[in-house]
Amino acid sequence: MPNPRMLILCTGNSARSQMAEALMKKYRSEEFSDIISAGLDPHPLNPYAVRVMQEVGLDISSYQSKDVKSYLGQHFTYLITVCSNAEARCPIFPGVIYRLYWPFDDPAAFKGDDEETLKVFRKTRDLIDSRIREWMLEQGMKKIYPKATVSP
Image 1: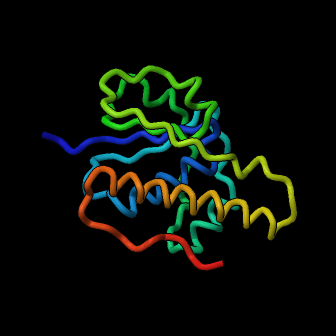
Image 2 (image 1 turned 30 degrees about the horizontal axis):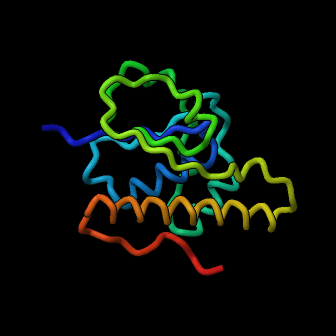
């Protein structure tokens, strides 16, 4: 039986879902044949997302925003929506066994100076990291990894 596939869906696929994809790959890539993120209305990768992920040793600078339409008709074992808009507008994916809703506020919506914006993106990254680690424990996944977060 092939390894399961995971799709992480957000509105723009520019920050939250990209961070979740990178963290999930860090922790669980050997257990999934694919871990993919996509957006309903894709926007370019947010440079703040790239910066805060680099802080924890994950380089997402080569990641590209992907349109969920390119994955329609494909089968995924897990579908995770990380925002309320994606949850409400999510297309049907036949064969999804586990559909999870992990809402996170959009850090890209924050308006502030560079340091304030970085703090908001760090908070979102850390919340996503914590949620993934919590999910791993709920699933009884034995191999636990160190947190990806850094001290402020």
